[in-house]
Image (cartoon, rainbow over all chains, first blue to last red):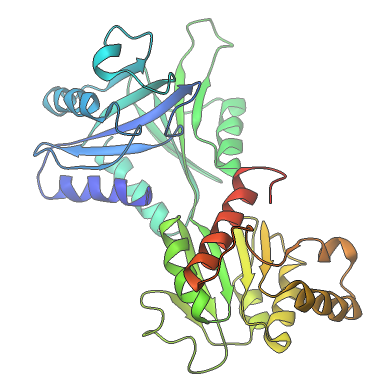
Length: 104
Length: 238
């Protein structure tokens, strides 16, 4: 199913939508999705794929919107030690680093 | 991701050509590394290039650092894109009808092989690649590699045995064969007579599937898919 994500992202882009791609680049401890897991988001809020078990996708969409606006890639980290832990921490106690880039 | 990179990446995947996308996490620049070529925004030192290709061979995405220069060296993320794993099913039987969609959902490209005319039909296997040639010929033509699993489901020695003779001497990462312990014991005797070694015979997972008390075709398919997953993901399992 992972294979569909990039194609979907390219498809959305071809339709003229703004698209951002998020990729898990590192994990520590227990984390629900392995390194390389991806999620694509468009400017209408459509999304495909996942970078966690649903714990951080909302926050990733928020960052993805910024990347769609300014075109700049972003690195975001999530984990229990994160100051945002109460909002978007990982219940499993793991840590995950996600890279967000614009699909041009 | 630049449009040029996206297009080349999609084209490589469509062609079944292994490729790694390397992203410089500092600049956002990206380069595609193929087994025999490189294309993109930056070049790579020989040892780093080899590390990326090794990751591609092992299908292992992850961070690599060029820390030899200085402590704040460039950090690169390697995303591997390999052709999907393959499941070759011998026997277009009822269990295969459940196994094919389950395997597809798990990420496998499925091919069902059965020379008996009325079995491997589009109406019984919508959207599945079908082969109507004899199993040993089909398996040889499909070039089994180490990202391929083979399952025989016919119970019929005429069909299963030739398939196993090819599969057991291939780099397949999984070989499973449907049949009771008694059926399998007879099968081992026959294959032994054909010159298959004990080490080769030991590769067969039989009775096929994890022991979850499966009864229906869908449950048996689930146990087979679970066993294939365990063998692939958990060294020494199943």
